[in-house]
Image (cartoon, rainbow, N blue to C red):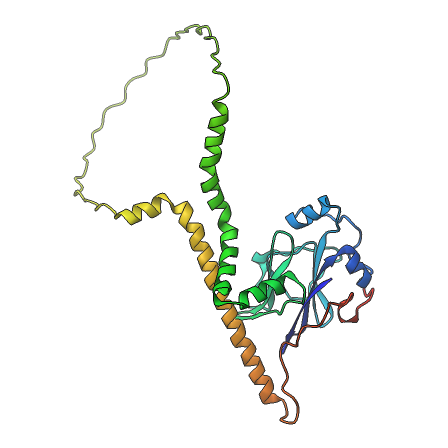
Length: 304
């Protein structure tokens, strides 16, 4: 089981657990209820089902209290309010209030968690990924150079809008391939169909309405200047550059959120140093990662 842990100075310990049904049943006797629960049509779980593997679930706890149980690993916002149904529940990002505490989870098509942020209004703080996870490898790659810090989120943004680029680039190639294949087919000519019989029906004569001529105002002629060439180019190839702009914006936003997260962690560390006695060692807001995730986080075992 993969466990992402975050220590908030007011909320407490927030844990995001990602694992299979069997892994969760070792810790919770009542969840998941049975294998093959409905709602495994997401791409990651559908692929795992074809491979004969157990689907991946997600659970969010705050100080050991279960807040959310999801049937798959989402990409988007997950609230932290106390609301858990008896069965697996799904959360729509549109229903999450951005001013209230919530998590923003980023995952890939294989349901691997790439990053988790704690968000509350303007505050954004990043989780430290657990050791050995794909999120840790991604974070280490981003911290290895300033170029990768921008390039990796940029590639993620392009991946979200890359379908448009693939259609634009591959569309003409597929059309040429289809035309080339059709060139090998013989030209078939269908025999002409017999002409249809002509039917003439009498039409009634209706009286013509009176002709009314309305005055037409004389509008002044306005000459619109010819747009420059670069404007015409952008209008013609808007489907190409718009996904690129979306990817650039996504990368810039990710870089800005990282800087805001670092500033917020620094503020919490300064507050902790002021409140702590001088004889005690300085506390850290985010403790160092453990050597491995336990089978049941925080000692839970068949808690239900």
